[in-house]
Image (cartoon, rainbow, N blue to C red; front, side, top):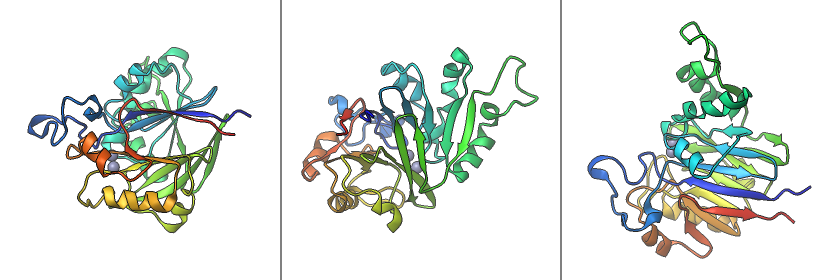
Length: 265
Ligand SMILES: [Zn+2]
Ligand SMILES: [Zn+2]
C-alpha cells in the first residue's frame, strides 16, 4: 500500500491571526515578509485518495479556495476554541454539491459544545428553512484511539491546553500535529517519538498558561527527536526571521502555504 502523505499547512497564526485587527496589527512582525501573514491554524493531510482537514477556523473558506480543495473526506477538530471551529459553517457547499454529509471527528467535550453552538449544522429543527438540510455528521472519538480512513491511519493523543484538554493527531505513524498545547500526559508523549515531521505549538518567547513558548517547544523537540519540526500558532510578537534565528537545528517556524511531502518506505 502506498501510504505517502502530503501536508499542506493552511494557517499558522494564533487566535487573532497576523496581522490582527486594530492597533495590535503586525505586532513585532515585519509586514514586508509574506511569511509573517498568518491565518488561523489548520492543516490538510492528503493521500492518493483521501483528504482530511484539521480544524476549521474563521479563515477556512479562503484557505481551502487558495489550495483548490475539491472534497473533504473528514474533518478532525482539536478543540472548541473559536479560532479552530468558527468556520465550520463555511463547509456547507461541499454538502450542497453531492449531498454527502461531511464527517466531523472530535472528542466528547468538543462534540457537546459544537452540537449546541452549531445545532443547525447537525440537526434539522423547526426554525430551519424547508430546503435546508444539516450538512455535518458528528463522530465522537476518544483520546488514544486509532481511526482508519482509507489509506490514512490516525492516532489520537491527549494534550493539556490550560483549563481544557485538546486532541493531538498522529498520521500514518510519521507525522504528528500538536497545536494548542502547554503540556502532555506521559502516555501521550510516548506516541510522539521519532516522527518524520512534528508540527507543534510555539507561541512566543515568553511563557503562557495555555500555549507552549519557544523554550518549552524546543525542549520537547530535543526529547522527541523528529527528523524535522515546525512551530505553529505563532503570536504577533513572533517575527518569522527572528524566530528562525532562535530555532535549534532542523526546527523552523511554519508558515501559511508550507507543503511537506512525506514518503513512507
Ligand atoms: Zn488556537
Ligand atoms: Zn485553543
